[in-house]
Image (cartoon, rainbow, N blue to C red; front, top):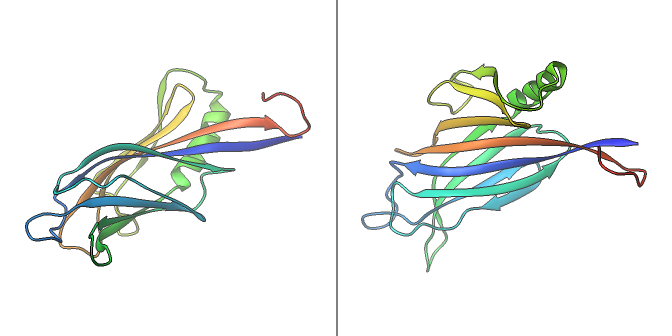
Length: 171
């Protein structure tokens, strides 16, 4: 029996113009959640424009649901301060993955669909879902909500693996 298993790779690239939560700066980190899984980046000390370039990986059957991103300021002696949040609907990855299978794409680079900013998402600019050498890739520029300022640059990759569950080899 074959089962779809995949990896959702979330690369937290950088933050821009993050809110000040300490005296003159902040010590930001990002918590990423999808379904019942969460992971977090390292803390960047005293920085309002941090560069993480950190990859967080989640294992799942399909990239369903919403990717949730929360930015916090680490504090030593009290609870960490919230610095805004954003979310990203993963549905465009699902439809792009189906289109990739229908087109039988395996190598090269192909733009599969455009995702435009609207009131239902946190996008600051048009984003494009592409197929790049077997991976479905979405680069996004997100506006943080419930905060005076802040943006996140994130890359989301979906890698679909077909596995055989009856003891056979992966195909």
